[in-house]
Every structure is written in C-alpha cells, then in structure tokens.
Length: 209
Length: 209
DNA sequence: TTATTTTTGTTGCAAATGCAACAAAAGAAA
DNA sequence: TTTCTTTTGTTGCATTTGCAACAAAAATAA
Image 1 (cartoon, rainbow over the protein chains, first blue to last red):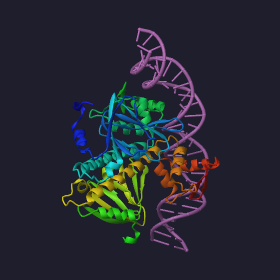
Image 2 (cartoon, helix red, strand yellow):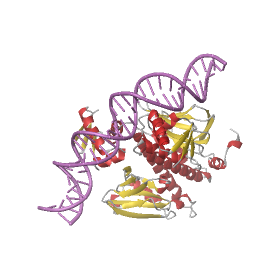
Image 3 (cartoon, rainbow over the protein chains, first blue to last red):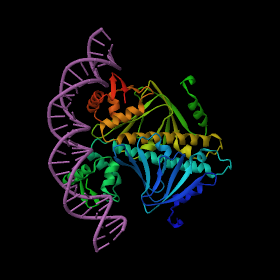
C-alpha cells in the first residue's frame, strides 16, 4: 500500500502503534473474506484503507447487512460475542487494508514504558465511542415502526447537502441494511415518489421535503 | 450510599477514579430523571448502584425502551449524538447512584503523573466494549423479521438455567423494548403457548423448547 | 379503607408487509 | 463480442401487524 493513499488521521494512528503492541496488517481484494467469527483470538481490526461490509445470515437464509465499514472504522469479535447468527466481514472495495491489533497487548501495561501506549488506548477509545454512536443510529433506524419511516430516516441521514442520495451499492443491499423486504422497499419508493416526497432517477434519489 | 452495598468490581473502579479525573456522584430515586439529552457537557455516566432505563419518544408518540442499564453499565451523551428523537434516562430502582465523569479529563494526559489514570481508561475501555456488545445484541434482535422471532430471541437470551423468564417490569415495557405493538405481543404469546413453545403463568414464562 | 391510575387480556378490522414469481435491464465474466 | 449472473421493477395474494376500543385485574395513591 503506497503512502500517498494514507491520510493524516491514519498517519497519526500508525505512529501510536509502537512496537509494544502486536499488530498485523493485511490487504484484501474485493469480495474477499476478511474475517469469519469462528476465530477465537481477541483482536481489534482497524480499516486503514478501503471499505468492508459486516453481513449476517440467519437460519432462514435471510441476509442482513449489519454495517458498512469505512476508513478509520474499527470492528472486533469482542463486539459480537454470543451471536446466534453467522457473521462475515467482506472486503467491499478493490483494495482494503486492515490492521489487526492484539487485544491482550492493548490492555497490558507497557513494560517498555513507551509514550505511545497511552495515546494508542485513548485513540482506540475515541474510535470505540464513534462505533457506539453508529450502533445507536442503527438501533434508532430499526426501532422505527414502519418501512416508510425507516426509508426516510435512512435517506435523511445519508443525503448530501443538496438533498441527494446516490445508491453506490444496490437497492437490494439497502433493503438488507434496513431489514425489510426488497419488493416492499421498491413499492414504497414508488409511493414516496407519488406523494412528492422523493424523486428517483435510476440510482439517484432526490429528497424533496 | 453505604459501602456494604458495593461490590468488588465497583470498589476497584472507584480506586481508579483518582483526584486527577473530575467526577460527581448523585443518587436518584425511582422514576426520577437522571439525564435528558439536551445537556451539552460531554460526560460518561457510570451506574455504581441500582438500575436505569433509556427511553426514546418519537414524533408520533411511540415510546421505545432503548436499553435497561444495570450496575456497572455506562452511558453517555457522546453515544447519542445527532439523535432525532427525544431521549431520557430514568432511574428504575428505589435508589440509583450514578457517577458522572468529565470526558475532557479522561482524555487529558495526567499532569500529576498518577498511576491510576491509565488504569481508569483501560477499565472504561472494557466497559465500552461491553456496551458495544449489548448494542449489537439489540441490533440482532431488531433485525429479526417477525414478531415471533423477536420474542423468542429475547426470551432465549434472558431466560435462566431452568428455562424460565420472569417479567420483572411489565409486558408493556417488554413490547416497548422489542419495538412491537403490545396487543400483538400478547396475541403472539397466546399463539406460542398453543404451539407448546412456551408456558405462561402470570408474569412467569417457561420456555419449553 | 376507597379512589384513581396503570396494566393485562382480548377482539375486529384495516393497513402494512413479506413472499413468490417473472420479465426486463444491467453488469460481470468468458 | 456472447453468455451468464445479478439486479431492478412490478404485481397478486396471503399473512402479519398495528390500531382502536373496552372490560377486568392489578397496582398505586389518597
């Protein structure tokens, strides 16, 4: 991974990853499996470049997209303990670079007395709070009582300053994120368009009100 | 609050709260408002004794119980930034003791060079991971497609070793936690009983299979 | 104690939702 | 290019779900 691709945030974070913390970096190609949750080793994964998707499949074969991970997001098997359904993390860009940090070496008091260890923990702490906030947004979304409310909440959160949302993945993927039936999702979009709440042009949605 | 009521975990945590971190402890009576999310000051609240409930009310008047907080749980307005709906934290036991920790003093490098500061951050880090795990459990619950699946998931997670779940709050409160209509919840319980999956005796539910 | 409020239990009904199915379009692979 | 796979768009239909309403029971307050 060439350094020109890195941003400042990431550079600072990497400075914190001093030699007292065990890390391994790995690059994944598109659609490649980053992690299945059979792995026991406690670790926190940090996305330094690219995108990934956390996917869940239940007994009935329903697929749910739990979360879309971007650069500087973290995830961990520590977050998903005692999950009933199967969980996979899949790379979602041509190249995704992930840094795995051993959980045990994070907690350990650094014997080398390096000045970075504390900074690393603080930084991870802030990333964890960000993740927590994202989880709460998802809970707020899923607690909406109707499909219409879910769609509008999602669109409002994701639209840009021009009130436009571009479907970069697919309508199918969004339905799986919202935990609703795809056909019903499409039907509701037509309804919202008739009510002049949105305007749909292919994979571009304008939010009018 | 008398010391006899405290457990070991809490005692250790309090040791970490050395004088370099700004904290305030406050005791709340049952049904008392601990925090409404208009408060701007960034702080992490730690429940050292008692119980609390995080409640959300949307524009349509739908009440949702986001989370039940127990001893040694944390919550923070940092987790709930940009929330559309109104959020309240209500004390849910005769006496709930909450310690508020200033977020700014957590992150700050301790000028007094105390040995506890790092331990405090590590401990909060672990509490944050626990909270994250609980959030993920809720997301797994809400991603279930039917009311029946939601109920069964909830009961399996909460039943004791004898496959018994006791309703300590109310059926109304559980419906609000599951984000489903109460009448439909009751109807579904009757159905599950007819299918011999559960056995309901007042506020006690036996999970048979 | 009695009065008042909240919860429980139940039902009918309208509306929302998921499911199955299929053709057309778009995208990916050979 | 052509072939194959995935996504999109749409519909009918059965089922699920929420809503409104109300009486009985339980819990709480006076």
